[in-house]
Length: 91
Image (cartoon, rainbow, N blue to C red; front, top):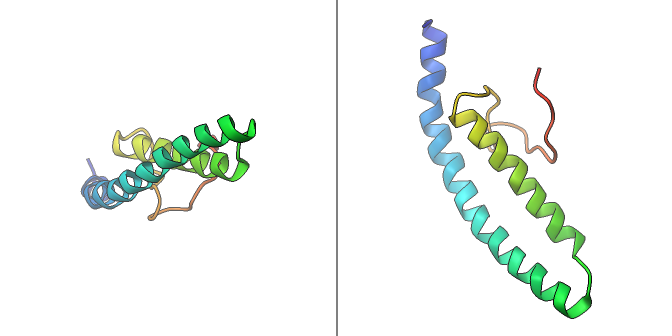
């Protein structure tokens, strides 16, 4: 293992902690949005597009985070990388 690789492994610890906290808090709000979406569907009979967009962005970020901390990818999650809005294939 090269020195650069070891540095990348150690960098995953603060990325895991900071991104994990952000995603945990964000997940709470997404849960609240899911409940609101459920109520809105019952009352209005249709889904709220903005809540769907926010939920999708959260799920994309969670996907990037899990791939990063399990060493499947070197692409860093938010806030250390771009805020992706959709899943893109990595090369």
